[in-house]
Length: 288
Image (tube, rainbow, N blue to C red; front, side, top):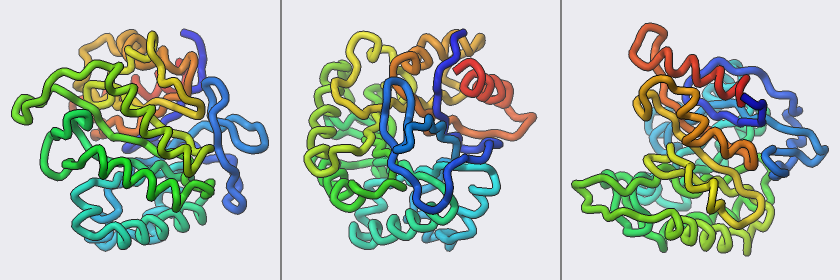
């Protein structure tokens, strides 16, 4: 297997420390299949997917201790998963204020931030897996325009993850199949709206099947610059042998574009799925 850049944000993993200095963190952009900083250095993101800031605040854990622990694990990136239901329950101003605080704590620990609009379902139809993910196209554009206004020039917020997990097969929600062309058009429109405010921000586009399947990118990639792709290769997605299927389903995209696994799940050493995750780490760090 060829060696390519393949960035990783793992839910739980043992990670290497980053080379960026905590002070004066540089803006990141896409060059080919790499993330590159202002000094022209390739950056590989390795980090942690955190819970929704609103939930963490409710648990009394939205504090420097959380980010310090992530730094101890070697994280150079954290993901803020913003659920539509939670931002509406807490209030938009209050949620963005909390995100601001999180960004400053991340900065102090040398961590970049992925801001994630954490919905699951069909944004095209506005039908979702459960009520906590309910949103609309209008609200999604509103969120990203607000984020672009607030963080467009903030280098710590390196990436906007536009929609967590597109899926169109939840029967109870009455979803219809959606073609990649329709999803691609919607994502390009959203990127255009963001770029009117924040022209340099990296936008992360997820694949189908709960963000696992990026096969349509082979023939119809997102036609915008500074774009990367997200994959969520949970253990149950494919039976063994896994590496060949990962390569076919999403890994090949890293030949041409940066790819980040923003979720992979987690388990203990002897639990179901552990062998899968161990192979995945090898696939991402050595094969990719």
